[in-house]
Image (cartoon, rainbow, N blue to C red; front, side, top):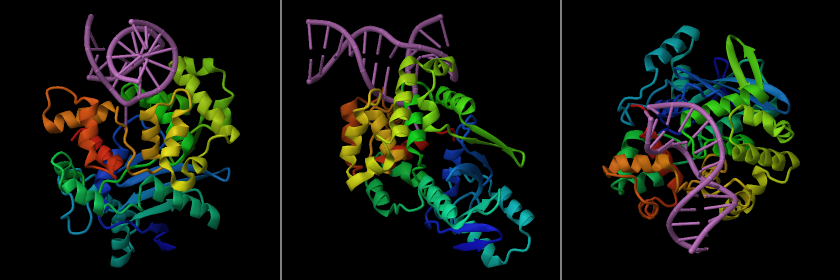
Length: 342
DNA sequence: AACCAGGAAACCG
DNA sequence: CGGTTTCATGGT
C-alpha cells in the first residue's frame, strides 16, 4: 500500500479521465449516495457493520499526463484542485504531488480502518470507479465505427461507473424503469431518506442505502406514500426479500462467469425485464457486453449523433451495436455521456 | 397542456 | 407467438 500525505494511493490507468468521470458522478444534483466537490468525491460505506467515510481525490480533476488525452472541455475543477492540494498539503514533495495528481487516492475521514476493512474499501472503490478495465480494445473497435468513433474521441478515458451493491443496483434500476431520470433520483432520495441511514459529519451529510432486511419487511403502503407505483413497490420488495434471504446474491449471479445465466435468473424475477437485467449486468455485474437495448436514453443519443428524424427502431439499434461487441456496455455508457449538459 | 420518461406485465387475436 | 394496452407519476 502506498500512502502520500495521509492518502492511500490507488494505481490508476494512464488513460483514466478524471474530468469525464467527475462529470458523470456529478450529473444530477439530487444524487444522495455520494457528493462531488471539485476533484473530490465523498462516499460512505458500511463494512462489517461499521461505517467508513471516504474522501476520494481524483487526481487533479481533469485529463491525464500532457493533456493529449481528452482536453475538450469538462476539465472539472483543475485550478480548484491544484489550489486544494497546495492549500491542504503544502509540504508535498514534487514526486508525491505528482503521484496524487496522476492517481485516485482515498483519505479515511473517521479514523483509519483496520487492514481487512481497508482492503474492502479499496476493492469497492476500484470496482465502483472501474480502475481495472483496460480499454485499448474498446478504443480500437470504436475508432472504426462511424457512430462511436467521434464519441469515444470526445470521452476517451471515461469508465463505466458501477453500482457494486446488488441491492442498490437492482433498486436503482427498477426505480428508473419508464420514468425520467430526475424523478428517478427523487424517488431514490426519498427511499434513502426514509429507510436508509444519514450521518452528519464534518459539515456533510453521508447517506447509506437501506438494508435489504428492512426493505423486505416494509409495509408496501410506506413505498406508495413516497409515490412509488404499485409495481415498483412490489418489485423492490421482492428483490429485497430475495437478497435478505440469500436466495439472490451477486456471488450467485457471477458464478461460472456465465452472464447468460445471470440474465435469465434476473429476468425470472417478476418486475425485472431485459432492460433491467442488462442494466444491472452493466453497472453491477461488470459485464462489459451488457446491452440495455430498449433504453430510451441510448436511442436518444443515437438519434442525435446520426441526425435521425426519429428515434431508431430496435432492430436498427441492435444492428448498429453488432459492431460494438464485446464492449456494448461501454459503448452505451459513452453514448449516455453525450446526453450530459455540455 | 400534452407528451414522454434510462420498461414490464397483462392482454389479445 | 408478436403487437397492443395498462400501469403511474412527474418533468419539460
